[in-house]
Length: 126
Image 1 (tube, rainbow, N blue to C red):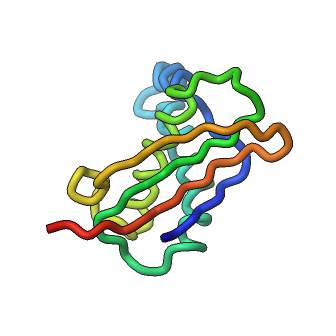
Image 2 (image 1 turned 180 degrees about the vertical axis):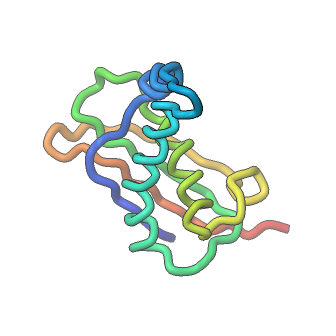
Image 3 (image 1 turned 135 degrees about the vertical axis):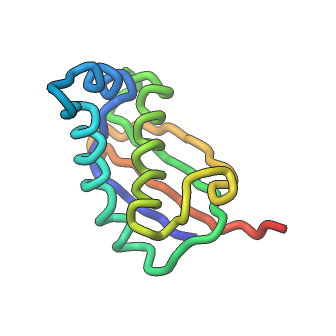
């Protein structure tokens, strides 16, 4: 099992949707947001995982400063960019159901140390 700890917090799904509405030609604020988030996540992934993964199960632990942000908004965007980051690093061939067998999401409050911890377990499939 791997445990990846990423300090701080990330934008919510609502923030990303709003950013995707801002365009100038082919430039999109939403794409910039996603690229910056992936750039922030990938060093933590590369630090912990050194070999390609097979089929995995993910458990996301979100440690928020309070209970103000909606759980679905907090988790949806991060899950998207984290799983895309696994693919972008070359550690996972794709983020479809063949390679991501399941994931679960758990929320906690930690006012002094907001972070996201992701546990990755490889699963045996037939």
